[in-house]
Length: 306
Image 1 (cartoon, rainbow, N blue to C red):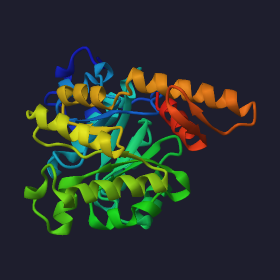
Image 2 (cartoon, rainbow, N blue to C red; image 1 turned 180 degrees about the vertical axis):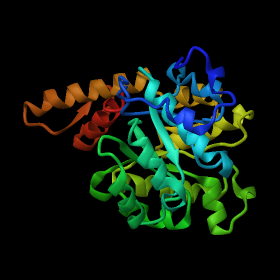
Image 3 (cartoon, helix red, strand yellow; image 1 turned 45 degrees about the horizontal axis):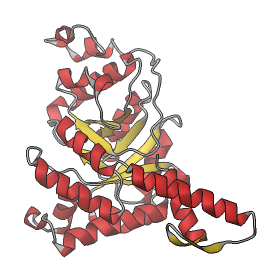
């Protein structure tokens, strides 16, 4: 809990709220392989006040969609105040700002003062958009981007300017809108949806950007949310955007690496390194069959995700 009494914000004007912004002293968490990224509306003060007690690996304070134009300044100021007063958090704190030319630049300028872990910029389209963000973003703050347009999907493999983009999120609903496709096709087994998901994953990986799966809007349908998580895991994803703690719980469970996977990876690593000392780089193992360098590298990849 950040503030003991959040009722102090009731009926207060923006100037008073802005005056509460202080120099941040937060102890930042280190999360390298997240499984869940939970969206949070900063106008819901009880949720904002609880960001230090949530189970999501990533908390995304969302200033874009879901916040009415007349309320965006208030949402920005509240976000900055609560982040600046936050002492610690088990989650990585992200603020999703509006497009760079639609208020995002001004939002970043203010957020630079309170140093969230990450700024995520909405509606990125091309390399020049990323370059504009990097000109104004404090170097201490990491950069995430939202891939929500057909242009962004087309350019994704080239968007990691100087390795500065850490992560990207797939905005499937806006993506379909930009392509002139209705949301009716967002269903299991649809080849177009799986193609978009695959291209996003592959191009993000080529660019060296960590990919996060799309937000499933029907937050009460936990059964289908679990199905999407399992599908995405089978494709190679390891994290998903979430709406609320129940989705977070499922995402963390599905994308968690099983003990059996870890034990196998540890065994392969040890066996390969033992044989490598004897100058043998390919051999038949009685437990897991043929082991060579690609199998060894896959084991290292699994162990690196812990």
